[in-house]
Amino acid sequence: MIDIPYSTKTLKINIEDKNLKGILVSKAEDYKVNGSQEHIVNRALDNCIGSKSLEELVKDKNNMVIITSDHTRPVPSSITMPILLNRIRKINPNIDITILIATGFHRPTNREEMINKFGKNIVEKEKIINHISTDESSLVNVGVLPSGGQLLLNKLAVETELLIAEGFIEPHFFAGFSGGRKSILPGIASANTIMANHCSEFINNEYARTGVIDNNPIHKDMLYAAEKAKLAFILNVVIDADKNIINAFAGDSKLAHEAGCKFLMKLSSVKKIDADIVVSSNGGYPLDQNIYQAVKGMTAAEATCRKGGVIIMIAACNDGHGGESFYHTIVNSKGPKELLERILKVPRNKTIPDQWEIQILARILSNYTVIMVTDMCDANMIKDMHMEHAYNFEDALKRAYDIKGKDAEVVVIPNGVAVVVRND
Image 1: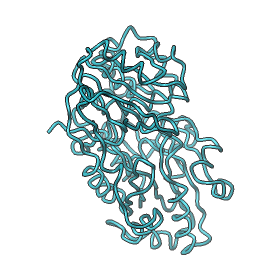
Image 2 (image 1 turned 180 degrees about the vertical axis):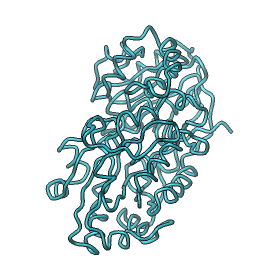
Image 3 (image 1 turned 45 degrees about the vertical axis):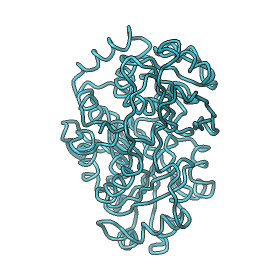
C-alpha cells in the first residue's frame, strides 16, 4: 500500500508489483531533525544570512509590515508568527505592526482560515489585512519590471518603515521555488503586474520550470520587485510531509532564500523514471482545495510521464475550480491544443487573469489524458474542463489500464508539489 495525501486525510492505494516501476519521494518527507520546530526557527533568527538581525532592524522603527502567505499555503504561521512578534516587541514594545496577507491573485483569506493559520489569539489581537490585487486605491507604482510591466505594489508595504516577510520554500512549477521574493510578486502586487510577470512567453520559457531559478525570467522580475519594495528581511521555513518545520532560513531576502533553495534542492531532487501512467497529488490540504492549485502536482507527473500517457491526479478540489477566468476559458475552448496555440500568441501586456494556469494545464492536456480522483467535487465540472473523473483510485487505475494496456508501467509521486524531477 502507498499513502497519498488527500484533503486532511490519507488514501491508501495499491499497484501490482509487475506494473509499479518506482515511487518518487522527496527526502524532506522523512527528514530527521534535532530540536523542536520553535528551536529551529529561533536558531535561524539567531544566525541571520547576509543581514542585520531582526532585533537590530526593528530597534528604532515606529511601524512595520509583516507579509505572510494566504490560506492556500501551508506556512506554519501558528509557530512562526508568535516567535516573530515576541522578538520584535521584546526590543520595541510600542512598534505599530501590520500583518499583510499576500493573496496575490487569490481571493481574500476569511476569518476562519485566519484562525486556522495563526491561532485565535493573533487574529483577535493583531491588525491583519488582506491584500486585494484589484483594489487600485491600495496600490502604488514603484517602477518598471525587467519584463516591461508596471510594478504596482500594496501601499502599506511600500510606505512602511520596515518590511519583512515570512513564508515557506517548496518547489514551484514556474518560479523555480516558492518563498523569498514571491512574498512581493505576486504576493502583494497588482493584478496587472502579476499578469505581466506571468505572461505566456515567460511561462513557455525553458527555464521557467520546477527547481530552476538561474536564467528564469519570472524569477528575475520577482527579484527586482523585492528590491524595489525594500524587503529588508525574511523568515522562510522548509516543511516535511506532515507540514512540520525541518529547517529555517532568515536574513537577506535574496541570500537567505537562495540558501533555503539549495538545502531543499538536495532533498527534493528525484531522478526521472519514464512511465505510461503517473499518479500524483498536491500534498493534501491546503494545496489540493481546487483544480487551479492541482495543476502544480500535475507538472511533476508531466516531467516523468511518456507523451500520450495517463496522469492520475488525486486532489480533493472541494473548493471547486479555483478561478472563474481559469474555469470558463478552458470550458469555452474547442480543446487544449487550440487553447494552447491561442495563448502562446498573447503579448505580454495582454495577459488575461489566470492565463498562466490555463496555459500549463492546456500544455499537459495536449499531451496526456488526465484523470482527476475526488469524491468532494462536481464530476461534471471536471469533465467540462477536458479531464476525466473518477470517484476513487481503483476506478481511475482501471481506466488508465484500459487506455495504456494491462502491462503499462506506473510511477507514483505521493506529493507532486514536493519534488523536483530531474532528467539527468
